Amino acid sequence: MCGIFGYFGSRLAYPLLLNGLRRLEYRGYDSAGLSVLDGGVRTLKAVGKVKNLEALLDTCPLAGSVGIAHTRWATHGVPSTQNAHPHQDCSGKIAVVHNGIIDNYKALRTLLESQGHVFTSDTDTEVVAHLVEEFYEGELEEAVRKAMLELEGTYGLAVVHADEHKIVAARKGSPLVLGIGEGEYFLASDPTAIAEHTRNVIYLDDFNVLTLAEDGYRVTDLTKAPIDPKVEKITWEVEEIERGGFPYFMLKEIYEQPSRILDTCRGRMNPSAGEVYLGGLREVSDRLLKARRIVISSCGTSWHAGLVGEYLIESLAKIPVEVEYSTELVCKEPMLGPEDVFIAVSQSGETADTLAALRLASSRGALTLGIVNVVGSSIARQTDAGAYIHVGPEIGVASTKAFTGHLTAFVLLAVYLGRLRGSLEASQASQILTELAAIPAHIERILERNEDIREIARVYSRSSNFLYLGRGINFPIALEGALKLKEVSYIHAEGIPSAEMKHGPISLVDETMPVLFILSKGDGSTRVLGNMEEIRARKGRIVAIVPEGEERATAYADHLIRVPEVHELLSPFLSVIPLQLLAYHAAEIRGCDVDKPRNLAKAVTVQ
Ligand code: AGP
Image (tube, rainbow, N blue to C red; front, side):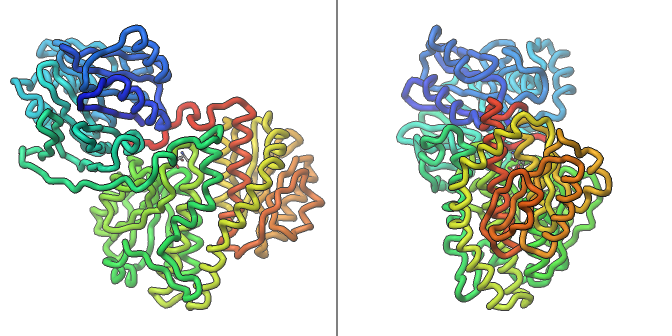
């Protein structure tokens, strides 16, 4: 996902632009660039890390107190200096940075080339620079507005012109946040690049046009009508986006989980009374009461959280639940209607596939809820209601604390729905909520075993493949553990329901195929022990995640990781922690870029 940062003020721009790009590195990128207004538009670009751009600036510092900058995650055109942003027009007076995809860029490029425009890159973005140039008649804001009318697809844009001391920005489908400082303004794709400067922000909406000028900021719509957007406050502290002594954000965020689960619960439950309070759902409670079915839609780790949510809601609220990959939901004609509840689960709130599924559900009249982490994100703003998980900014590309934050939100939602619809007694709700309140302490105990888990990761860090097996509510955890291992250590891993092994995958097992089992106290554990025996008989090496007190697994496992025993429905909170640590340590031991794995972005804002 690309990153945009802009500065308008009186300080030297380029150091601030570089710092803003460093704050956005976690989003994933392959090149970077910036433009400043310095007697004209001065542009520098570099392939690779922001430090390569910084090296250019060390030799060629730029004056100017207004500028725009960009980290590019390539969608159209290979990572190269020519394809890096900012992109300029023929006159060299206009520079544009863009996050999103211009769907009709080929047609626009053909038209613009027929009008004499000469292109220098393979990107979709460059058409914006030439389009603005085509419409420019002395007023940049107006030229950008006209260009927007021609663009199809998604964009977060920032544009400068050599003849105007301004930045003009616009969005459709890709986030842009304005930071309001003391006599200066900051523009960014997300608030992590703004928080150290100001806590006063405006989350732009689709089709907003923002102009930053000497006389302040102005927001208008496509008809030039003024808009008076709400100024909101960033609620978290800057140190939350620092590593705080940890070698990687991923490890920091794994260790944050106990406190973050408490943050998600804060003010939302009374365990002794068996009550849950979700203020964001109050206005839609009547529709929740009558809901026929729940459809959960998300991607990746958030999809795994949705699978756990299915077990929780069906067990506690007795409502039928379907969990869909957002990427797949948009490929079919979903039977969604006004009696259905559609839940979009997302850490970033910007995942294009989930946004597309959300819009489809909305068009069918379903009640749409968002379970999201990033405040003010697109999914949070486009759903009818919802609940933030409040786990703070998640910087590591591999999602960890947001996953357990989503699990927490699903426990609260399942209890809330169960109590609302009368399918859950207060005493049952009280038991679940009391056990939920104890989960952070249980996780702390698992984290104390980090070094033991690191040694197990070392044993398997040279493996090429891994099978992760889980049953029931822990099958989604097998999927999640496999995804974590894949995405940060590049070891191929596959999550499979434990009992499915005998239906094919067991053919993979020999002494070179390690197999990880997740056991919990349910009745499935006996059957899983049988699955372990089948693997053992074929010389497969076994790692087992087992509840304390489960001694039978000792006979089959090469390595045991014990976790505290809890209610079956809450066991995913604990079984996932060793899997997060195994993935982290395997990646670190293999010398991988743990926080920024190759090819990955923190939020995938393109479909
Ligand atoms: C998880 O570790 C991955 N980074 C990825 O699967 C992620 O969960 C997925 O892209 C969905 O992102 P979202 O939660 O921001 O919508």
